[in-house]
Length: 124
Image 1 (spheres, helix red, strand yellow):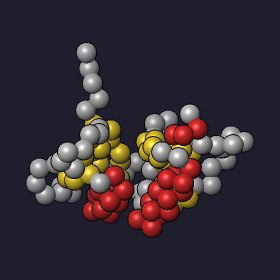
Image 2 (cartoon, helix red, strand yellow):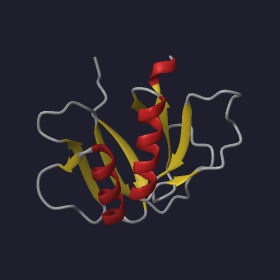
Image 3 (cartoon, helix red, strand yellow):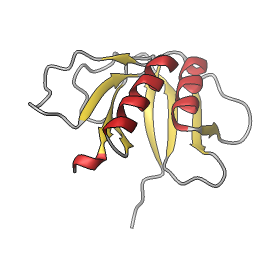
Image 4 (tube, one colour):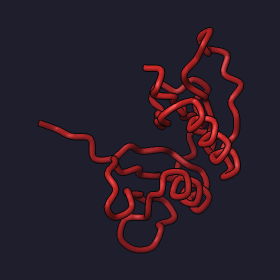
């Protein structure tokens, strides 16, 4: 049986992407220095989670990506706090025209434009 080893994001600026995602997730680069074209981030020691690999890419960002990250927050207050923290780290709001009437998620983009969501999991 296969398992997911890493989620991979294409980025155009490796140092900026590493700085954002390590701060956003509390992850650390896996073994050694950050590469110019490929870096794997992993949960800090003692934490669980899937690796996030960053690969240098010249492909344009998809406005409506078929695959994206969902980051979970415990409730609406935690969601708002995390959105504010991520914006301060360099994320940006996305003018998402596909929100349902009462969304439990907020769509943001990382500094490279990759879309991701912050989910209020208390509404599940």
